[in-house]
Amino acid sequence: MSFTWPLALLSLLAVPVLLGAYVWQLRKRRKQAVRFSSVALIKAALPKRSGWKRHVPVGLFLASIAGLGVASARPQTSLKVPLNRTSIILALDVSRSMCATDVQPNRLTVAQEAARNFVKSQDSSTRIGIVAFAGFAELVVPPTTDKKQLVQAIDNLTTARGTVIGAATLKAIDALAAVNPDVRPIDAATNSAAGGPATPPDDTAPITKPADGSYVPDIVVLLTDGANTRGIDPIEAAKQAVDRHVRVYTIGFGTTNPTSMVCTSAQLGGEAFDQGFGGGGGFPRDPGGQNAGGGRSFLVIDEPTLTKVAEMTGGTFHKAEDAAQLREVFQNLPKQISLQKKNQEISAVFAAIGAALGVAALTLSLLWNRYP
Image (cartoon, rainbow, N blue to C red; front, side, top):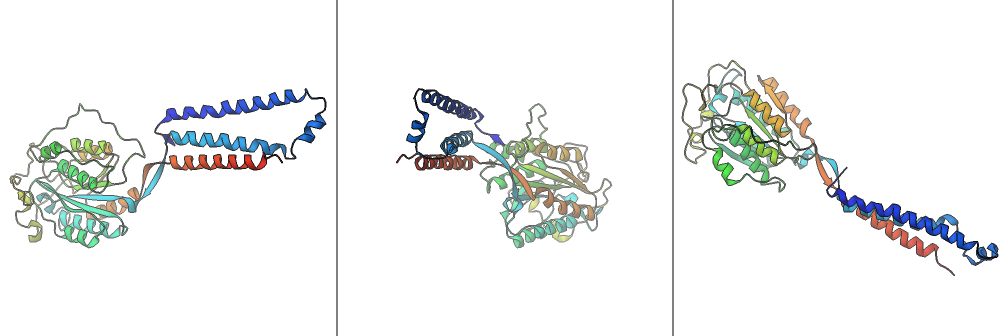
């Protein structure tokens, strides 16, 4: 248990002080009693009642003060939040490299199947959203419990050029912010930079990882088969997730020896995605398969970056090289996120206990200390 205002616990010092005053008063009365010539006359004058009863109201009163003192410090306890209170954003890579056939029939087909099964396996009250990203990132389906809508969106995914892992992370955070007031949306300046030229990470800025139990219950599951090609660097985007206590689980999909790329006609889907989902300014074609930063193939997983993103945010990195491994990764995700820790203030509990003890102390004092 932790406390928001720990200094308020100093009020508990009143308990031993009052207890000491009560004991001192009892001893003082005993000393005064010996001045009378007949103790028998004193006993006869007092009402008939058990000796212990006179101490009970005082004990309850002191316990009441202790309860109210703890409540004033605003105690918090770590509770496990069930999955049905969680929103999950699936950020799916639909870059043209997802048509690689090193995973039969191709990477995107297998990823779609795994995502569909993941959606269908969730509790009916779990909200799931879908972000698709290639040269741009777009929220395809806001968090919803409508599994039919989610499956239809997964079936209709199409490919395009480019891979914006960082921008996809920011888009997923904004999707969570829309349904969880505890998650701040990404500011306009950061969002504006997300779609620009590739930016290197700022390794000088300190990163403070949230303490265990302080994460929001909502998470991002990001699947990609390559490296970031433009826009905000994934590490910089991860810092935004860390700042908002949002965990990002990353999945690197595909082998290290990709073969040819073969897209179905449905997966090609025209050039709408190349134009930023109808928003203008598509990503330039790159017949050589190299990214804008020069050197990395679109077809090779940037495992170090995905691992760092997961570690920074409190998530985990998973690697899958075939359909069976990817299915296993998705099957294991609900076990990892089904119960999430969240700090819950319990001041009201201690306040209620303190008030009840105070009322009991007053009531018993009136009942037991009445003189005929």
